[in-house]
Image (cartoon, rainbow, N blue to C red):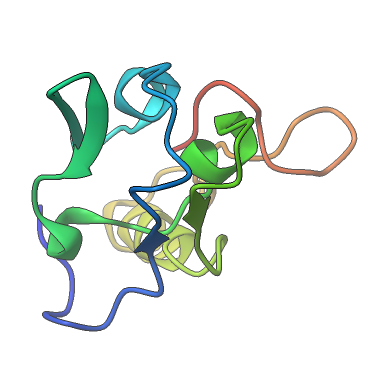
Amino acid sequence: MKYLANSTTLEYDHDKCRGCGKCVEVCPHGVFLMHDKRAMISDRDLCMECGACVKNCEFGAITVNYGVGCASAIIRGFITGGEPSCGCADSAGGTAKTECC
């Protein structure tokens, strides 16, 4: 699912990437993929800004203003009558480290 075109705050620094692949593992929308032993962005517009990639990048290669993408899940829950939550919060109220939305 794509959100608004050219509006994500996602930034990726290829030079800082060390090829661990954590971003590929945790991204719920497949924004990242591995190419030549480094991550790359497949489609920035797929980013829902959940922050899972940032929380798991030990090298500071990724930045995003995370949390804003969760609004979609909250609105979807409201419309469908489900729980109005994206499920990103951990027990301390922060963003989950390994999965989000």
